[in-house]
Length: 625
Ligand code: ADP
Image 1 (tube, protein in one colour):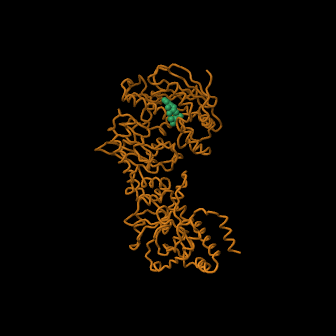
Image 2 (image 1 turned 180 degrees about the horizontal axis):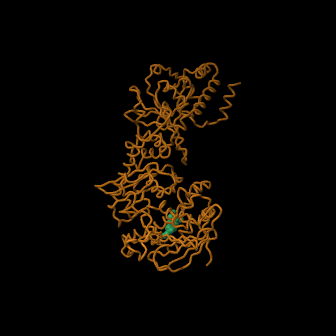
Image 3 (image 1 turned 30 degrees about the horizontal axis):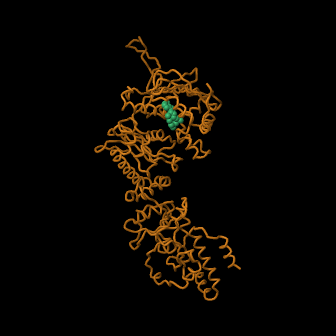
């Protein structure tokens, strides 16, 4: 039969596997076993609702066998199997597993990381084998098929004989080279160790011929003699970790379980266990990954926890169990109360599931509160990864804000502490007389710290929170206040300093009128500033829609993006502003030049684009003549 070619994108990944220099080639076994386990999950799930399957949970198994002479390892399962189309679509196209998408988004250079983070499924077997044969029979079908491929030159599918439903994957190992000893995978002990390392919690027995000590037949019971006999033995421990008490499980075991679940080489940053009885009975084991998955901010990322009912997996990624903002959490939930007959779509609306989801959310928040207290450094690392997520939970979670629950998990850079701080800590440091919690939103703490607007507050030794996250200002506006103190933007808002000096400020109305006339529509208003000290000018947005929001919305493709008001604030005690006032009496053109320059300077400091940079430099050059 003519060979079929792999789809282009599959071929690229395949080439990568065939020629892989990846050091953890051993993960191929984990990938193949995990596929077998998924296939069993599918049939096991069917068997619960369909008597025709005729199998019990205890009947399912995965078996590994080795043929040293033929240099092959075979992994067989009695799972759901594949028909011809499925063979074609599942093993001929990598996109089926989503791995290709990850890879595309991560860029070519991160190939090795992809293998580590996500595994690459079935194709990883080509890292160690030069030929793979898959013999499979689908549940409910009479005909079995054989898929065979030596990698790059394509694959063939032919009809074949197979009695039982299920799949057998036979990998013919590559020849050993100087650097790689593929023969090591023919060693039972090596395979045993790999199963223990990566697949110990697979819920079905993984069996393999293993040498066990047996009493020699016919030996004297008084003086028994022993011999080593190969026996089919279950090598994985199977007991789901989440069914064991936290105190009885080591950190190592949790880490191993997580690594298997999330296909991550890193250890999790947090382990969260929940055991609930009463209303709805369930156990959950959740993890916060130490780093963001590469596809975290893309559409390819799927949130959700694995859902089990009494040890049988119902769904791999049940998204109804996690609110969007906590989508980085990985883990499993097992509840005997969930009905197995319920369809997967209906499950999304299940009342019990909703109760579980809400409780899990609370547990995760409670754990984060503990995290911040127990391990500040760790929390800051967490925050660098997922701080935005906390903000999103506040701004809106399906229309319902979680601001009261989440506000103490926020962190912002403090102008006085010179490090991240929480709102609680800020409030605790506030003096009685301080009326507002001050903040400034912008690109970076350094840029914000240099703003003219900060001067007056620094003079009063007031602390300012520098908001540098994209949506931070929306978060603050949603909160409105903290510990009964309103948030106030130092860029736009009334600082409420109640300074005697400020109250006596000369408003210089004529001068301001002149500036407004000169600049026309470019500004909404020119006014004498209450917040400047040594700097001549700054731009404020008059509260409400801020410059940061303007920049934020510019990212979206909108025909007519909203713009913040531009209010030019001038320091009437500054020599340059006074010079403009003097010029106005004698040389109006010069005064106009001053007004325009001050306006441009205010734009620059605010990080706003100049209307015409070259005209601005010409104006400055004009002054220098
Ligand atoms: P993933 O497991 O991430 O989906 P793989 O490349 O490992 O990607 O496998 C592709 C698909 O092939 C699987 O999703 C599954 O549908 C099918 N498959 C692989 N191995 C088996 C098996 N042992 N039994 C049944 N189907 C399988």
